[in-house]
Image: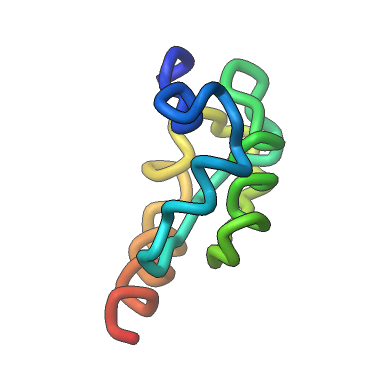
Length: 81
């Protein structure tokens, strides 16, 4: 996960990568994560007009299991639109 870079195919430019995104997108981040910092994902989300879910728990990478119900509800709502 830490090596994944959506901008790699685009000369490491988030703006160039963002320009090709056409799909509605939901980005889920943990704002307290220290290994995979949320700032690049949030910046990319803003560039593409994505919906975001920012979790502020202390679960880090386990955010989806820590707040399973909130994540599932948000994803279900997103997919239903």
